[in-house]
Image (tube, rainbow, N blue to C red; front, side, top):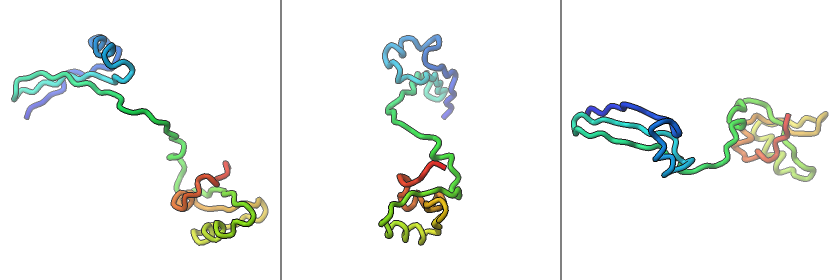
Length: 115
């Protein structure tokens, strides 16, 4: 099967005006593909199907970074959970310290204090 992409055009560039009017902001690009076996020329479009919020900063935190966790007085069960995962209590600053990976595994992201 000898398919060859002849041309790829970004939305809004010359040759995409009709498709931009048809698909609007959902259009990303248009590709022209030639199939020499079938002797056909195809026009394909790349569209946005879904948009959702994404926080790239969460993915840039190193797994082994020590995070500070807030645990209220009386939540001894949470403290034991953190300690069992290798966490330590910082007596001077009054918060728990735990590696980011373990905090995510234990689903304690909401307790992370910006540090």
